[in-house]
Image 1 (cartoon, rainbow, N blue to C red):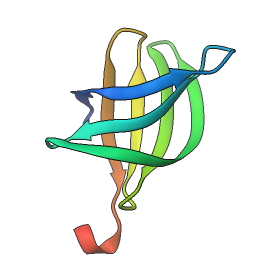
Image 2: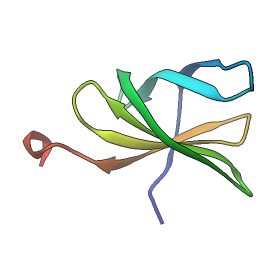
Image 3: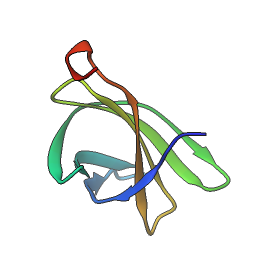
Length: 79
């Protein structure tokens, strides 16, 4: 189980209703999204992988009302 935190995500919606995140809040920082990856639906909402500018990868999750984020991987310099 990942350690998800409630967070703020700035996103727009596609014509089909998929969110396209362009930034997220993490530890008091606003992190620009560099790339969006795999996305999938589960019983509890939508999940999406995003790569931020500094190389970290996050899993974002929303139930339509609240966004949550979990850190998935970090580049070597953060270890």
